[in-house]
Image 1: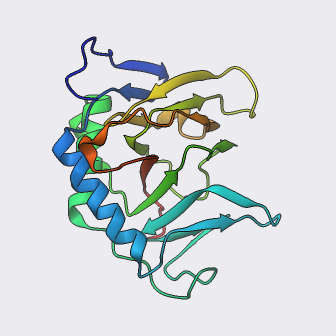
Image 2 (image 1 turned 30 degrees about the vertical axis):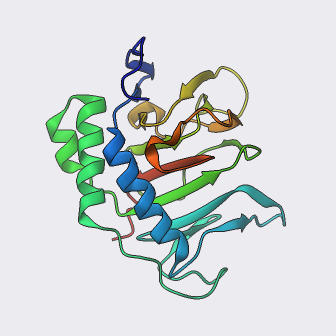
Length: 219
């Protein structure tokens, strides 16, 4: 949270993977929570994604710009209600560029970053995310991850497999995590969320929101 007694330092977790604690001001977090609530209502509502194996993800997901389901992006949500997803707003693109500029301290990289989709995952106290790669995109541009609400354990691994070596990072409300370059296709997951750790300032009474911005490369 902002105003921490002992501020947490930024960290390069792996080449191209940068953690910036407390990047989002509380007011911006509240704005994002309200935006996510609106997207969760539709036109394609938030839902538990069904995997090709028949399993059901414990997080609930809603998409902006493009609709994601394993292992593809579409403009319409054929696996939910057939509607077209909400458009990707310009202010979210600008936020993504500001995030890349902050993480990489590289104005050129930030200017070139053009995210066109956001995957918003909501974790209740029991939800988890297994180790996986974000590789359904045709672009190798960085992934921008924003955390709001309860603190989680974010496990950031290697590009070869789901096992070790990996690093566990605590992501708190307002934290930014960007991974690209050599770490763009690193396996990562969320083995645990710590319920009740966020506080009421964001307007999110419980759970964790994770907003990930991506370039699909689909045009």
